[in-house]
Image (cartoon, one colour):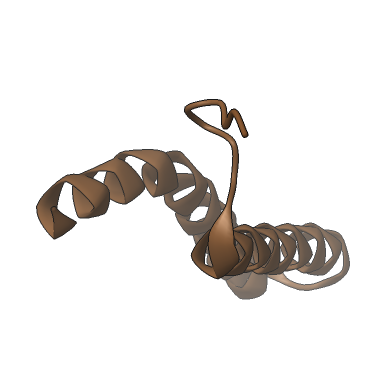
Length: 75
């Protein structure tokens, strides 16, 4: 049976997919809650919400390079 080079197979790929979905869900929820709190709360909370949004965006941008680095180091 032919398997394309990047097609998922095995339980580890399924677990990785589920963890990726969970990560993206948590980041999305934190950004949505931060935006909501930015609109409703005072200046101190707005600064903290801005930091949380910045941190969340940085995490999303770093996932792919860190994933590739971990894959290279594992072999």
